[in-house]
Length: 370
Image 1 (cartoon, rainbow, N blue to C red):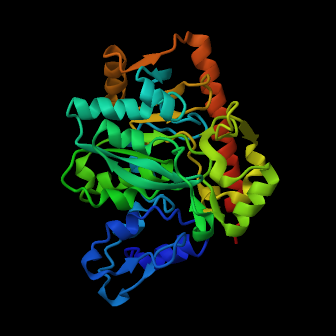
Image 2: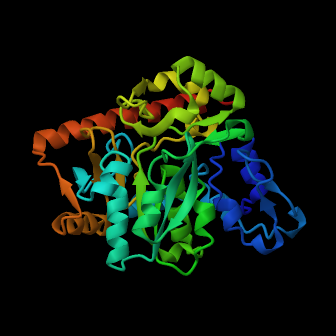
Image 3: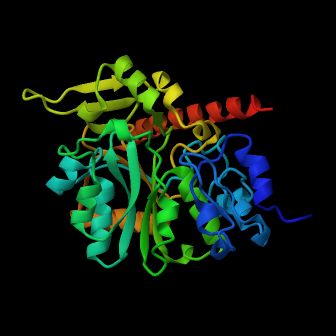
């Protein structure tokens, strides 16, 4: 059987409209020195640039989260027996947590737990830095290398003093190009914060021993039902539909639906509730092809779903992830709500419902493809 190459990736993924644009194939191409493949258009799949220099090694095809070549190996590594019996993946334990740091709690998403744990890892020299998602403007995020608490705070939320020049911005996207940023820090012990497709790619890289995946100390996965992308016409439509202005958006929060906090007008913050079913036309097309809501291959998964206001739902999946959360709680870095078995069961039920909903959406989408 011949080895799959980038042309096969184009045929099997790009041409079907399911490329996640994670950047794994470009960043870790064996022929990267020769600039064989690359991104030439924003928010579009990579293309051949110097095709004649391609080694046809197959790495790009193997690490793509949409080819699923290594699913069997990864499922075994992460104790995943399939969505029928494990709709939210293998779970060691589940918590509802909150940061004990007032700054992380104020500026972070939900309970500020992810940044608190990263900061704890930095202080304890468990990692040298972390690649996190930083908000540039509403619905626009970029990957940022953080190695201090100040870096983490700057990456949290959308800053009140930002005034995005919307006329100059052609497209906004909530999808962060974490993997491309990772390639710039080959000699650090890294913590990675990513969506399920990004963590999937990283785990494939680790399984194949692709540099710099050996330097990734821990994978912190985010719950992800879908990401959004806006061109200028969609921005105007979104503003009309939900009666708001992009420049007034202070914070985005995803729980059962999308919650948008607007800037304080001098009286109090206004929160706009947007049901997911009204966001379909703003959704990144490739998200239709993803089945993983709760980030089954991460060491720890995080999200606001199921927890009370200002708390983060935390799922531990690996021994490393369990130890980190346990140590962070013992050290007083985060506090865990007192959940009995019934409360944990209800929390799992909520996440299971979203997981199954995303799986059904993926199956329907793929069955409709030619």
